[in-house]
Amino acid sequence: MRTDPRAGLRALTAVADGSQVQCMLWVGALNSSFMKTDAQQQGDRVELVATNDRDMAKTAKDARGQPVYVYGEVPSNTYPRLQPRGVLGDSKSVDTMAVDALFVVSLPWINANGATYDKLLRDFAAAKPEIQAIANPAR
Image (cartoon, rainbow, N blue to C red; front, side, top):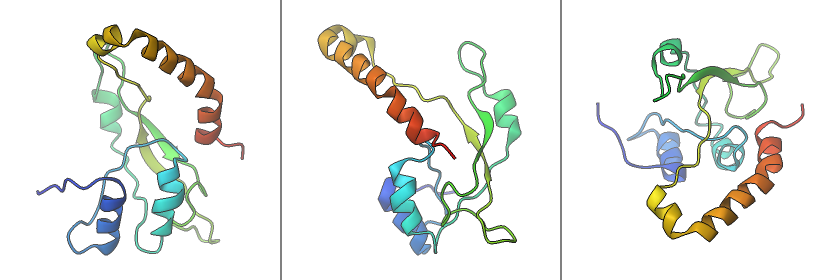
């Protein structure tokens, strides 16, 4: 099987065209701007496809022995133009796999940029409520 190096909007456009790329794997936060805007604009030519490989959740472990993936779902009407439709016309939830979001920085970079790293940590802490609100909007 051949893979394609395109990512983001270029990959989405290629999938929507369908002549060279038939699907893409996208990893990102629920309610991300990419999915809410760019992907939804292609909703007449692309659709979210469920993944239900529960073995991934059972077998993939991190260095601490904790599961890397957990079973989850994209709730109905999160991306109305991308999700399959139910009998009544509303969008259906889509099975998916989820991972915890991590910010990874090398120790040499931290040591060389201590003040910048401290500012970055403060900025992340300050942004946490907004990030949570975007990822988990009140329904």
